[in-house]
Image 1 (tube, chains in turn cyan, yellow):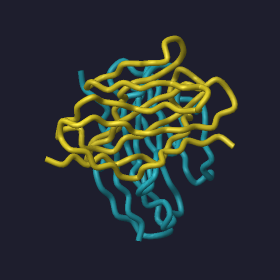
Image 2: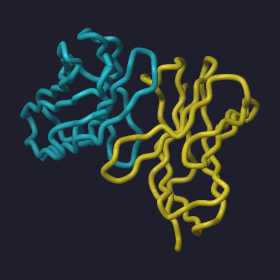
Image 3: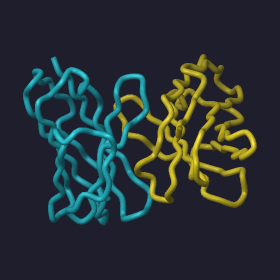
Length: 111
Length: 114
């Protein structure tokens, strides 16, 4: 059974640019959640997708957007990057309303 | 306000010694409580969770946690730590059995002395 994978592992972007992060969910999981973890902090919930529809959103601006594909993989897009967007972005997959399994994360640095 | 407090940013413990990591929460509804571990380069792994019933819950890797409603606490314990337990530990609280939209603590970094 393949676990949750994320790409890329690391990414460096310039302020104002746009970035796309990718997540492949674990086999049999139809729900993907995204989190932002700033250095020295716990994760913050960004949003969740269930069967290609947004199913909940945390306190993040609209420049954070996402997609879920028919195979339940997902993308996180961030427009107009700001320095404070530098963080570890974590993806987690689950069957609906069940335990989440986390990927290793993508480390985004905005300069 | 809803919050989770992990008072200890770092804890250093000798290998073989016992461990207790503290977690206090403020939450308006009946809480569902979780402990996660994060190792460098790894994602978050669920150690244990409390939904209801017995207030002492057992988890993986020999960890346990006790829910004390009167103290709004959910402390994590292990009787004897191993060098492989060195990692960052996060406590989280939510209102659903599904563990999204959790409120997370800032984490406690566990350092193991040989």
